[in-house]
Image (tube, rainbow over the protein chains, first blue to last red):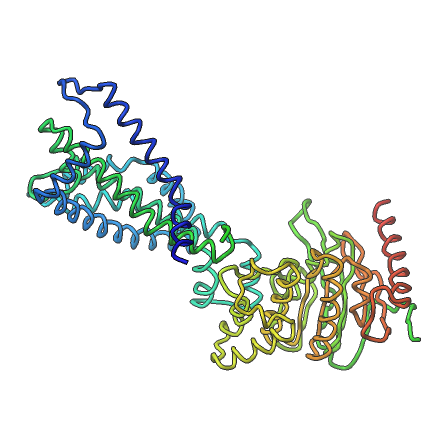
Length: 269
Length: 264
């Protein structure tokens, strides 16, 4: 029993382990070849970056930064989720909105959220209060994916489902509950997953550029490393940002989506 | 032996108060020069508990007729009257909701009409036993075979508790063996429940095997070509002498219609 379970985990994990191994291998190769910064500093290897993470944990730098960043990510993401859901529902329900807002959403989605940083800094980060500016950038980066996910999954509902609902006389809240919400759920969750990626990268852009010494997150550690020419610190921050992004996707959104699709027979069990 | 081969006039008055009445039903799609008449002046009266099969080649407007009766579309002129309630519809595809189990799919119409859970559960059990799916109540649609999915769709249509059941080529996509066993079951369920059924098909033998009457439609525009009474003793077998004989006659008529249509 235990052994089988272990085998199953190993079988699921090995492609990932190999991919990470190849990535680390290439990185290490660049180190061995002797890549340097123009200032003559050698490129730190994966080992150096991991050791630096250990040092930053030990000196109580990275954990508070991580907590700070995750808190911003969570709040910004939830606000984007609420806004995106409301806009998505409005667009689905009101045909006039859909023509105008539909294409606008697609445009917003393709806009790199970093372009909101200067505006947010000017209007919202007043007197060193950077949090509002950070949330604004995260929301602008993430909400179009949520709204688009909802909208496109509504468009993909088979016409027969609507005929069925009508032939059963489904109306009002019950119609939305039993037909529309359930039918759009997979697309909505796919939108949520994509919105996570967008909000995480928007947050990093915001932290890097808006950065202040008052409240530092992972982005500030990265920027700190750059301004001090501390290459290991930069790579330690980079590695941490990458790992958090992957972990949230793999531990939260991917299982949610997979479970949903499996129950509906859309992926092999 | 009691085989009626003689055609009857296309308007049949069965009783003083018919259950379903089609009166000069006409359906035109589009406007002006692009207008296409799908159905023209169709009239029919059906008694409560009657099983009528609507037969025709594909594109003759029989599905249009069904969606008009279902209230999914509006007539251009003429009238459709149903003595009570909203008809239940069974489509060619099972149209099961993939996020619900078999039981929950069957319970769906009852949820929409706010039945209490006990009653829902009892009715679902009864209907699932009736269609032979009680052991699959907790499966999801994707885990079922094509025939089982249609059984589930049938149970769901019955759960709507409507007197009138509309069936739009529900067994067309199934293999012959599965279809045959569904015919048996549908015949039995119809006799047990006393539903009034309008069954659309392009399969002549299927129509003869199931219907009290078979209504043949001509294509473009859809009209009533001819109506046959099927007085063959039930349960009928697909390859019995009587079923084959009447099917043969209707097929000849269907071919003649197709030739006329092709010559136009």
